[in-house]
Image (tube, rainbow, N blue to C red):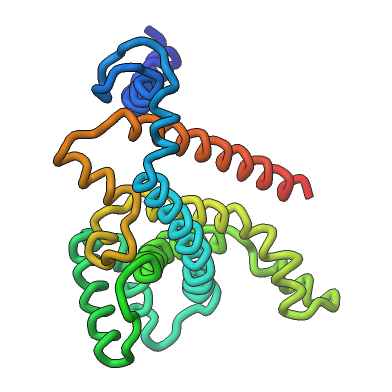
Length: 265
């Protein structure tokens, strides 16, 4: 067997290993059986049942709102961190700053969750805020973790961009803000979009950190699904997974089209 065919075979096996469980999950969402992983004939009953399950729907909407806010805030924070590390050269405390910015990349989720919980408790005692832990504390916790990933992507992207491009724009009369908006930001856009999508996915998928920093006012979808494992899942979870997969595919397609438009522009 040639090396090219062997590589294609390995690629196919890897993709099958990754996507077969997802495809099976999506397929069972259209089963009429009450057991989540048993085929009982084609049916859309579980999508209708999902629409009437207020607990799952509210948790899913909360998770989406938190993920959208956390990803957007992570891009702002992580972009600034990556910019400082990539463009401001050596400065006093750089090593400590970089280590603290990248700590969420290496610390276990349990440690991060406990540390953020202690931080919010101490902050509440000192200032009275937050009055209760919920969606806002989850959002801030996820943004803190996502910012570390965004910073790495932005720093790597800036390392491949020549500073001379900004200098040339300034020599032609553009101010610092104009040079950044018209030259640097479009070139940095792929890294920012990738960081946003990564932070969004991490927030939507997280259950460990959210369990530490949440309260009765905030129960995300992964927390609800995890709690359902103790009593047994229902096919409604499969139907919800299909909807999330469809939204993720649509979001990925729109992001690809946006990046293609930026590159052509």
